[in-house]
Image 1 (cartoon, helix red, strand yellow):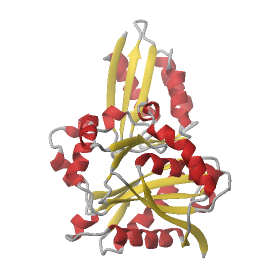
Image 2 (cartoon, rainbow over the protein chains, first blue to last red; image 1 turned 180 degrees about the vertical axis):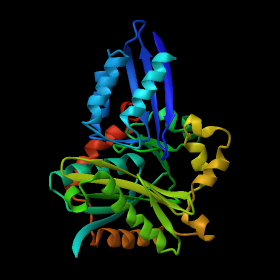
Image 3 (cartoon, rainbow over the protein chains, first blue to last red; image 1 turned 45 degrees about the vertical axis):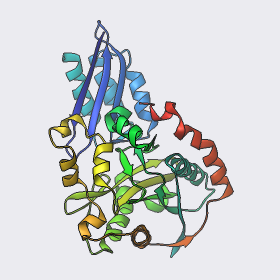
Image 4 (spheres, each protein chain N blue to C red; image 1 turned 60 degrees about the vertical axis):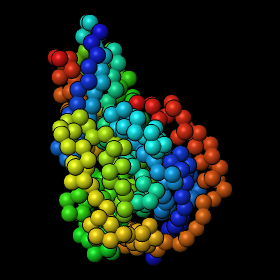
Length: 91
Length: 251
């Protein structure tokens, strides 16, 4: 199991951080997406985190794409999260 | 002109956040009028955004040492230091259709009230999307909004005389912001009405300006009122959540 934290400072001032645990077979065991941003509806972020659990990188990216259409994210985008996931998996 | 209720009061961090949530819930059910509440946090406290991790957002050791209360908001955004002697918080609870359906637009409309309030002091203020108001390039106010089906709650700050050194010690800047500076960088990034004007601005002046500012921005007239029994009763139920470790350390 690999545990890592990756952070991105978004242009405009907000910060997104991903704390993640990745299993030996490259799947997300646990993930928390945090920061000083806004998500509407608010419950969607926790729901998204739960959906990401068990995914490999490619599956995770497709979940993120699906959610980009379902939520309004202010201060960051789910592309930023995808970028952070990629960084975490490669670290 | 449309009339909104105005409430001026104070409370501790837990109670203030419970009242805000109670008002949002009851507004969504159509049980209370559109409301502007102006209040202070007594004693001084820190609130963190719904999506923040406590340990990333605040310096817990310092909070414990100085006995500064902390709770998590239901709204997103960043951590805030609410100085009992230096900051007035506003809460607007209204029907979404009375402000704006578009979230960004509604931030702008409400934040204009802060801009107008600051202009009453002869200062030039600017709304910086998503949720900041700046004076001379420095942040003087931050806001955050939460929505239910038909109602919104937007609350935010106006710093009139916040102790910025305490603020700097209380809040943690994200690691990549830290680079070197600490207090010096906070003083370069945030300010207060008193600091900008070179005189001591009072809470009363600030409250007066906020009432006029929001009245202009929302094109409404405020009528002084009180919380209803229902709001107080619901807030009493919600307050325990804001006190609880589970909620505060949720992330």
